[in-house]
Image (tube, rainbow, N blue to C red; front, side, top):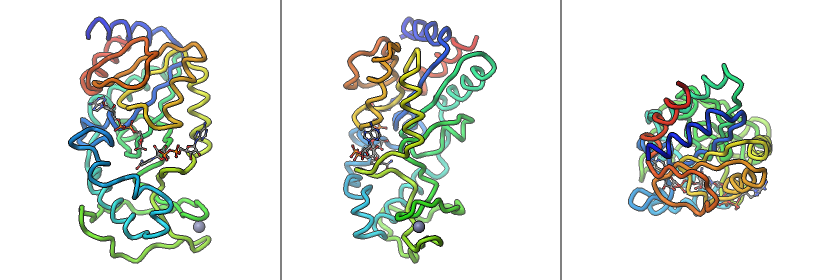
Amino acid sequence: LIAEVERAAKLLATQSNICILTGAGISAESGIPTFRDKQTGLWENYQAEDLATPTAFEQDPKLVWSWYQWRRALVHEKKPNPAHIALAKWQHAAKKGQQRITLVTQNVDDLHEQAGSSATHLHGHLWRNRCHDCGSPVTQDTEAPSGSKDARFDDELITCAQCGGYIRPDIVWFGEALPVQAWQTAEEAAANCDVFMSIGTSSLVYPAASLAHLAQQNGAKLIEINPNPTPNTMVDITLAEKAGVVMPLLVQQITT
Ligand code: NAD
Ligand code: APR
Ligand code: ZN
């Protein structure tokens, strides 16, 4: 692995435009279960497909709210792990140099931000709310969520001051379009980067998974950090290791 890390560091240290895509795997070592990992897969236990959809919310908003209260309780107090921290350190170092690093994440937790990174969120933010009908953001006090796995959400549903619609978590659900601005930022970064590095994503969900292909079409080199194989076949350097282990090594080599 060390040889691969050295190759990756040499490549990353010399290029000027880097695009990084992270997924649930980068938060796994912070104790947040990923979606598709076997035993802890959130999906197996909670049929995210049935809950993270606009239809589910329109049919039973309280059910969807109880699931998100539980997800907030799960993520609450989770801290950035060495992968988030190394990435933030590298972003700061790059700002001083000529390197441009665009960090795009599919995650809805705020661990990148807690570590000091700025990230483009393709799938929204677990800690924010917005109106289901007109989309206006709702400043919500981040009180510690009371959610537990089985408790049903029994508060009154909050309605939008602008249009009276129901307030919902600011997350992109199945079948919903991604935020236009976020997607444009991600597409542009992937289309103009010299190196595209994906960290902790199964690369199964579109359109996020198409960014690697876009980068490759533009001639970028591809690096992947994932202990398991993914459908990405055209990767130049694979670091088959946990992000929390390999990111500190990689950033240490890049920044010295
Ligand atoms: P999907 O393919 O049904 O939806 C993806 C959406 O992305 C489509 O509705 C489409 O509008 C948009 N899209 C596709 N290609 C695009 C492009 N080239 N440019 C701009 N927009 C494009 O995917 P899905 O599996 O139904 O999930 C929808 C989204 O919700 C996914 O991004 C998924 O990751 C996300 N999601 C989030 C959670 C969560 O809790 N964070 C859970 C489930 C799904
Ligand atoms: N370090 C790096 N990668 C890891 C680690 C780790 N410590 N642990 C697990 N992984 C890898 C797994 O091998 C898997 O390939 O992280 C990946 C997690 O993949 P998913 O669970 O599919 O999460 P993600 O790719 O982010 O899912 C994409 O789908 O459910 C929607 O919107 C949701 O953003 C999510 C999107
Ligand atoms: Zn509204």
